Length: 140
Image (cartoon, rainbow, N blue to C red; front, side, top):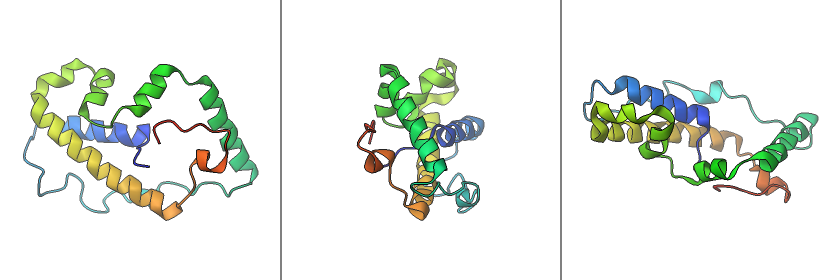
């Protein structure tokens, strides 16, 4: 259950790329101060099970399942790390200082992942494939 949404991953990439000019060690100092974003205040709770909004969202999940491509499945199954984003951002990002940027990006991803997991724990909402046998999990 350690997956990150595309928007959270994009935030991590943008943050890492914008910080790449100051490649100081981030081993002891977090890139984002604790509770600086407060994601739980920005993300609405999911719809209650069985409500019309819930059924609308499940319909979307099933539609996405029917229309996803093998390339999209491969992308989801690829570990979330620096190398996953090079094809999206472009090879130019490697000219900055690849080892330092890779470390910075991995740190940013881990920090965002920690916040993401905390928000997931607040709602404790079952995954679509746990609710319906019609949903086939990818990358779970």
